[in-house]
Length: 374
Image (cartoon, rainbow, N blue to C red; front, side, top):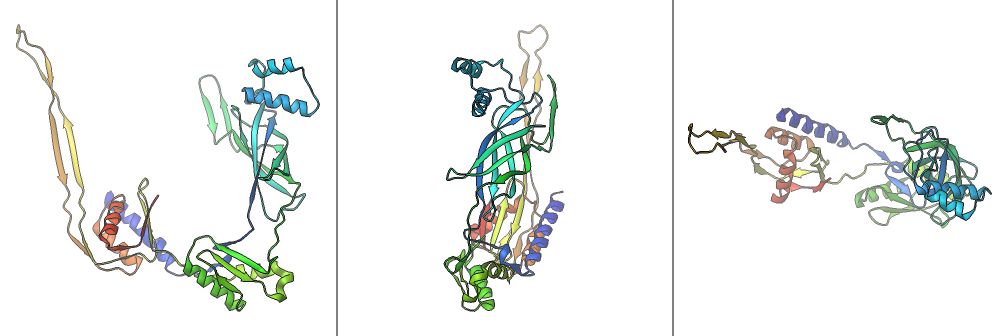
């Protein structure tokens, strides 16, 4: 079983990395972002109504409901407010206090709509069938950027009685498609100073150099790699009026990104992924499985009849130690991931044993790659 699993895992590594060895061209837009173009999170707190006995019953729920009533002009005596806030007999299980979040894009325009995520803040059991009433959404600067409202879709359910409950997905969190209307735009303009900055998603000096070279081949003397992540591109004077078109043309250019020599190991799942440029020096290696098993067979010692002895339990432990025979293997220097996969597959080890093998190879200096654990 172990050998079959090992063959599968190493074969999977070979398939995945032989694909990367094809050196497929990748669009610049797929490996980079543009400085200043990003999503901004906006957040607010609101009230979901119309719940069928699954709402919150905490003091927070009652206090929030009273504040909401006061906002709409329904005022109450201070003593009455204090009693309602503390009186748990006041039913509020048809409402729930929720947090509302959304991502506001850089080019979102006033009047357009975006999706929002609604999550219960109090002790509500489910938001199924609920309706979010008008909730302002604030940015980090404290300004209102959108207003959210609408029916909550939780994509699941929760039903139950006194002794049992049936639940699907997470009934206390849901989404409102197109649930927020943008009231304030985020102004993002590209190339105001004549420069557009591209940021690589994975830092690499070689990838930055190749990206700048690809841009300069299309727009001569316009791009320079500042560091392993940043490429500054000067907008040609003739294209100052059409910066968006200029950025789109750069994004469609293709490069071959540099893949670092790296081995990533997840010991919890026994998964090992080997990068394209990982190499091994000539090394001698052997790996054996040691199995230690213990068996407890206690014996009962019974005294002779009419004696003054006592019945006692005598412990008895049997220990069995087994060690699998493992040949000594010599791994020749490898230059491709295919050769590395064949060398590891020849050892016939279990998938989880690959983790310790790679660690020892790294300590011996035979593994020429970065070792990363997840």
